[in-house]
Image (cartoon, rainbow, N blue to C red):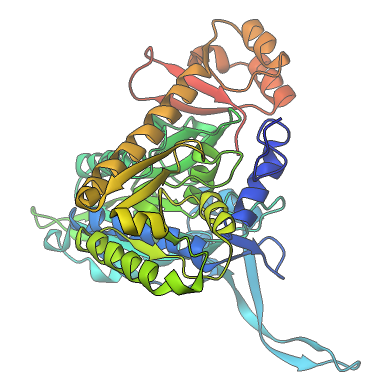
Length: 480
């Protein structure tokens, strides 16, 4: 077997391979708080790039950023029955406001609150309460808000980036005069997510609508982006919810209409989270480590000086600095690895960290005014050579890498979608340990027999696809 940087490989143990990629790329580690993680600088830089790109997209749609409290009064959540039922088992509850020393000298909670607080699992309740005071007439609408924040959902089976008790996300909340405007906005945000995921992240996302049992608690419609991981499972990568008037009724979000009568507003909410980083790993990484789409890579080009003799160090370093400046003038995020590690260790380091392009520069490159280029979407031994005058081709190569990752992920997805025409066919398929998605008529799944099969193989109805499949189709898959 060929030697790989990551063991076990994907085929040997996909779950452990995933954890080892995170460790090798130095993205995150488990924290002292069960179910939570520490996102390390390189991992957080990826999230910052996701934030930067997506934040610019929503601001072009008229969305403004704000911030709302971390703590939500319990009675706020209780106002929307479906909502509290949906999140009740995931809520972390604050019941005391101070600590004191107990008889044994250890700190214990003290100062019991008259009314507990919930650490936000999502913010519809607190935002609904606040904006009900901001909206008075139709002239105050539409209201389009977003916040970048953390949330807490108590997680029994944590896995870094995919499922943690605390995670980072953005949550958009919009308010409209009419049902049609709100529905249109929910779908517009779905399409905005789709464009972001399929373009900048090169993820093989499929747009669809959730079936009733998978809807966001309190929503009338939940629209989703489902993406396929390399082990054939489904990952919910982002959602957009048409909430109708359920939260407006609960929090009295009303306005004086154009007809001088009182009306109840229509709302939506939508979000993506650090789970996207898990999706990127599970979609693009290989047995040598992380593979990053160039748009979100902390360093799109890493320059690796190959210094074997101290007498040539200044000459090589000056050449590397000139190359870095030229690339930064092209608006390319560039990093020089000036550490004292050996050249092979530096090369493997950046392979494992998923840098899209590596430029290896030694005395030979300096003397011949050229560059040795390695691409992360190609095997490690495969190298190409550029002259200094060809540096302006780097943006083109980065685009080629993005296109390669996108096409590769789409081919992997499409090869693992199997049409199914009966419940027996579904049973036979997953009885063979099928690694992929089944697509079948939704009506066949609205039966007790399907529920038995779904439980048997840990399957769920992921979404009703919007396009590309027969009407009333539904995807069935194991999921993260």
